[in-house]
Image (cartoon, rainbow, N blue to C red):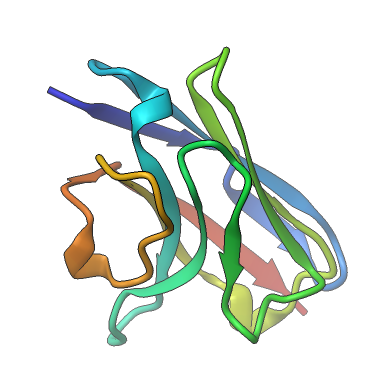
Length: 124
């Protein structure tokens, strides 16, 4: 069974940076595409960024392009989300997710495994 554990969330001021990490265990990490999603109170969960199993392809939501970077280290079984130039609207619970496939998956419905989430709060 795949387990995902996020870390790195917290409180940051506008314009600051955070790096989220998601530790993967239970299966072969390099066989899984990974994604980061976020959900604000009262809103749907949506895709922030996703990455293929090799790390060779990535997708970003328009609202985070140029500010966020998704990456993975298959030797460490970890996927990262580097978040720069943070804005108040980035405040949400951030989740990582995994699906056993090579290519990027954007829809939450495509993913089979989810972490517990980590809170990111951007204060103005």
